[in-house]
Image 1 (cartoon, rainbow, N blue to C red):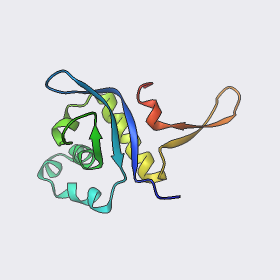
Image 2: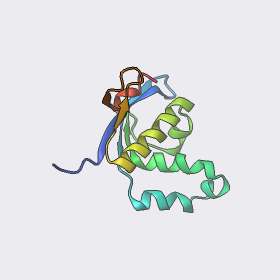
Image 3: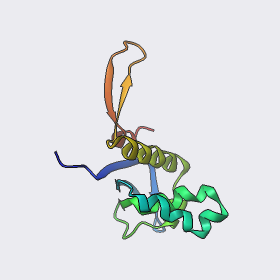
Length: 123
């Protein structure tokens, strides 16, 4: 089985562009070491550590809707729920190598797998 390096996602709210179009479906790739190191050189990150996630996500999101390119400005203008979703999605695919989570039903204790990519519209 080949290594999966790109993962589809659906944002809970979606990015609204200047024309009012909503972009919800996207693709994130696995991060490389350089993706995590390079933002540390960015002056915006040096001035504000919280900006690290903005630069990092702009590097690893390869597509969002039909936007021509991913930029830090796009990430800056996401709704908070979408930013939180993308941070969780990033951690899951880069730490586990999959977008699925094992969950346990609190009522019956049965275990299931849920795909984070499918949860965007539910959150």
